Each structure stands twice: as C-alpha cells, then as structure tokens.
Length: 221
Length: 199
Image (cartoon, rainbow over all chains, first blue to last red; front, side, top):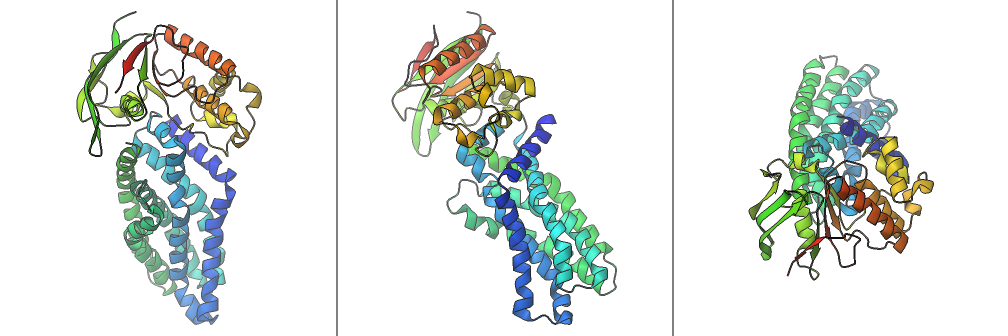
C-alpha cells in the first residue's frame, strides 16, 4: 500500500517538474473553449445553450492530450520494467497511474471548467451540476484513458490510435455529463444523469485497471 | 556453497518466429553467481528478462526453492532486482528522489553511499554523466532486500573505481546469501562465478 501511494507521489512530482505538459492540457482546454464564442457568435442564448457540450467536449479532448506519455515515457527509459517488478500487481500500477493522471489533469480541468462555463454564458443554476458531473466524469476519463494508453503502448503511431480507441468508450460519459447540465439548465432533475455517471465510475474503477494491467504486462514482454 | 535455490529446467524461448534458446537448464546455489556469456543476439538479455518474470517461456520451468517461480509473477518480483540496458532514471527528479520510491530516506542514503553518489543526492539527474546514471541504477539494487540480482551489462560506462565499489556491493550481497546472474562482455568482479555459454 505504501508503494501504491509512493507511486502516485512520484508521478505527481514528475508532473510538477514537467509542468509544461500539465499546463498545456489546461491551456488547450481554455483556448479551445474560447474559440466557440468566436465561431458561433457571442449571443448569450445560443452560447448558453451549447455551453455544457462545449465544456465537456473540450475537457474530454484536453484529458487525452497527456495520455500518450502516461506509459510511453516509462517504456522508453526502462522504468516500466522496474514498475512491473516493484511488488505491486500490474493493475495496481495502472490504477496509481490513472489516479495520478486525474490529479494532474482532471483536477485542474475541474478548476478551470467553472470560469469557462461562466465565460460561455451558461445558466448559473447549471454550473454546479456541470461541475458535479465533471467530478466523476474526469475520473472515468482518466481510467479509460490509462487503459487505452496501456493498450496502444509499443504500437507504432500509438498517439493516433489512442483517441480512436478512447473516444468511443468515452461517449456515455459525455452523454450523461452533458445531460445532467442540460437538465439543470431546463429546470429538470439532474440526479439520474449524475447517478448514471457514478455507475460508469463504479464499473470503470475495477475494469479499466485490470485491462490496463494486462496490457502493461504484455508491453513489457 | 549451499543447496540450489534457483533452478531452470529446459527453458525455451521463441521470439517472433525465431528460436532464441531451447532446453536451457542450470542451477544456482545460495550466494552463487552465474555469468551469461555469448555473442550479441544469443539471448542473454532475453534470459534475464525471463528470469525476472518479465518475459514468457515457451517451455520449461523456473524453480525458486523448489517451487514454480513464475506461477505468481508479482510474488516473484519481490525476489528480484533487475538492472536492464536502460538506467530507468527520471531526468526531472533529483538523484535521491529517483530512489525515494524504492525505500525510506535511510535506505536511500545507504544506497547512494555504496555507489559514491551521496554528495550529488540533491542534483537533478539530467546533470549526471552516463556513468553516474549507471551508478544510480546500480544503487537501486541495494535499496531492497531482493535475493536475486539480474544484471544486464552492469558495468557499462563505469570507471575502474566504480567497478571496484560495485565489486564490494556484489560481495556483500553474495555473503548474505544473495544470487547474482549477470550478462556481460566485460570482466566482472565476481570471483568463483559459474559460466553459462549461450550460442
């Protein structure tokens, strides 16, 4: 267990040292979201109607950005072999990596999502629901992303393959996440959507690390 | 020398379509050392990865104290300290931080002293020379209490003083009953090591 937290701490420290990578995905998120008012016009009623979808799609794409280096750097410098031998089962290594990814991209995305939603003229009552949906949503994205990153590890052009693999899997997260915010904006109950997001999280939490662990074992061979 | 701890029985590895080696059998006793020698591409590194539980054997068994070692590869990993071709050193972390994942501060200090990197502990690893990075990778061996050391060209890029210090590490590891299996083209300070020639 100490090893598990140690691995998260190590990944966290590495991300802070390579702050540029972390910052890049947040800046991408803010920048991509800022393009929409320019493209579809700043009219509050149009923009506010589209805001939940914009925030979610941009968050989804921004979370994908750092994924190809999640295990890629470790494979390149030999650290992956050491991680496979560190005494943790490969699935625990994958879970620690996914949680570290969430801490360094998911949490900053959550923090940036509020201001971006306000910027996009999202109805005020929908913003807390949007964030409540992003909280389990970004964790699921990190889990799915780490599984995808482990599966494409060692493949040529893995960086291209990765979004093709992860984006379809992330579609339910997007649907329920946007659904929750839309329901709140329309004055309906957001709870069913949020509960479905939590159900996705409950499924992804054990399944994704198992898949990623098996893929890591295969990549190390 | 005591009884055999590690025993390989008829190990066979096929990579791609190519037979790397077949029917490989050997035993290593407590405190023993085994040198893998052979030309490039003869399967030394493949064998080391297999012994570490990182590779897969087509046929044959690997026994640790009479039990199948590769049945539970996570449990086997606790017995193994593996040093590959690559140093697995993160350039963004300091020398001490690179080791911190593998043990507490006391163990880090001891391991760094063993490879004479203690005075560079706070330096970012990207400032180190290739030989110093190799020494840091060697220091990781001393972090745990793994009885089986698997070394792939451990002294590549080391100066003579570092090789001598590494000899001390190997000696104390073997004196406490540890096993060393190394693939190398350079002479290693491993007195009394058996040799296994791979063709």
